Amino acid sequence: MTLDRAPATPRGRRRARTAATWLVVAPLVAVPIALYAWYVWAYGVNTVFWDQWHVVRLLQLQGGGRLGWTALWAQHNQNRMLFPNLVMIGLAGITRFDTRVEMAASVICLVVAYLALARLFLRHGPGSRWALVPMAWLLFTLVQDLSALQGFQIAWYMILLAFLLALLALERAERSPGWVAVAVLAAVVASYSSLQGLLVWPAGLAYVLGRGVRGGVRTAWIGAALLTTAGYGWGINPQHTGGPAVGFALHHPLGAATYLLTLLGAIVPLPTWGTLCGGALLALAAIVVADWLATGGIHGPRRAPMALIIFGVGFAALATVGRAGFGPTQAHASRYTTYTVLVLIGVLWGVVLRLRRPGGLRRRAAWFAVPALATAALVVLQVATATPYGLRAGPVAQRARLFDADLVVNYRSAPPVLLRQVVFPVGWQFRRRVPFLARHRLSVFAGPLASAYRRAGVVPQGLLAPLLPAPTAVRALLQRDPAAHQAWQVLSDVAAQRPDLWGRLGPPGRPQERALVAWALGPGLTDPLDGIYLRPHRASLAALARALAEPG
Image (cartoon, rainbow, N blue to C red; front, top):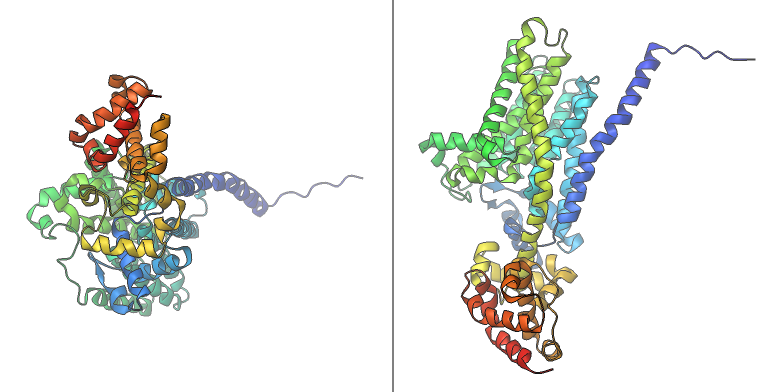
């Protein structure tokens, strides 16, 4: 007896197609997420770098029982960082201030932010799941290497996460007004994490000013925005911005415009194309918004991408006001792309919405084919250039952090010129904060890296090269004299990073190493770069020269 299979219902066929689509989309989305997580794991270094010294000061206050509201609320450049301060202090207490844990927490924030973004997208576009793939590649772009590989940037990822959670809550507030309290809470967390967090409020206006929104939701959002912004600005000093005067953009409009377009275009890591890509992105955003306004306004599925565009362009404008005085070259700083890429995601989202409309690009909408193709080209260009750029920039950033770790560990003997160039802050602040880390075995002092750098001393670029082969007399000197060991290590590093020396001196061997030490004591000491590392070891290099001259 045979049983006939029951005919599939339309609903069953839709579910089967949906499942089949997810079987392909999910792995394609997982690839950029996994690549980004691997990138942070592979190139992250546990060290205190630049703004991270701000956290060291908070830990010192905590250790002395003097950490209070004033310190947590204090202005850092132009930022109020209350919530990131609490998170970083908490993580430091659990992990002995391992900054790689902060980087890992940033990855988690970015993953949850993407899930929130996907949820927003699927609420209004269940038939466009394929768009989640390029959105994942854009959000997890490796062009943001400086943000990904610095623990202090967790503040930026907290803002991004809070922003998208606020949008999700505003979506729900349409039917359940109580959700507006959740949205306000998320926006307050973003606002008191850094200055750009205040942009959540104007971005949220894309929701609360739309038709069909209850007046109570609108009033609560706008009222909370005014109160939060007033609280942020109370007592803040606009002169302490950590950059040029904020009036530069007003007095140099052409330079400010160039900076703005370059900053927006930095999501495509091709410096010579920066202004062109930025101009194209800004034009595409204007076209998408104008199309919305001409065809019914900002409502329904258009609100989330509009909020992304407002936030991303608003951030670029804020950065231009505060940083344009540095010049357009500084606009390529990769940490800015964490937010400016939201503009491209919003534009892509708008294009997808247009393509899903009845009639698509036919009839009067045929003109939209040009911006749609331009958007696709810009997305492809960004993804195609960002990953190779990130894979090149990762090792460079790692070497910079290793050099910083070397200087921090050897801060007592490090040449002042290197401390001024690499380590922040300098002077009495730095020399007061490093002993605190060493005494409590925090950050770089908690792991084996500190012992290796302490034994080697300050080496070029912080890269520990294998020691050059040494004859018996030199090996004996290295074993009994730590200073001689450091000099030999520095000489080994210089030789490893200067292959041209072996072209002049010949391949490694005893006569060549004798010549190398002679070079180090002579021309090497006067070399502008090598002399920085060799000069502190003049006496030990002379002792090594005598040991190399011994027979046997």
